[in-house]
Image 1 (cartoon, helix red, strand yellow):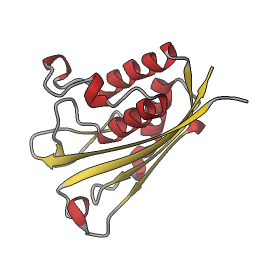
Image 2: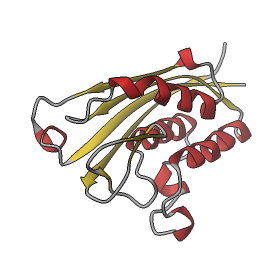
Image 3: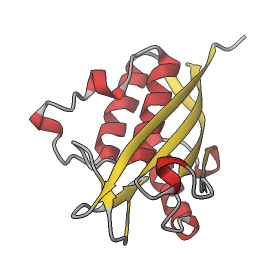
Image 4: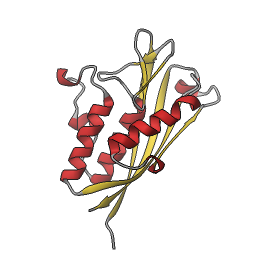
Length: 160
């Protein structure tokens, strides 16, 4: 019987003026971006935390501390490559990833195909194994009022 592990990741970032909005490695034209030490890609951060959790390797704060200048402004897809390298070292392969972005605005549907393609490429899996969805909070909470964005990710790993 195969050894399988499920991981869940969650991340949140505040929206702020003067930053680019990067989600799943896609630069989305918008009046605000996400605040963070790296590119603040909330979607990719949730994916990384799900992967690390499934493998029992901690979280992205442990691997990439936000007080380390080496990670200032770094692309989260570069960090995802490093996470995937750690997974391979530990004998894990990604079966699938399912992600939900929580954001009132902007509309993200047109950007989701590129997000899926980017994640699949960096995860080393076929695109059909990566699912990305977006939802609003119907005006409720910090995401609903446009103060920030959040993302949830679930992943399945298999020991190779």
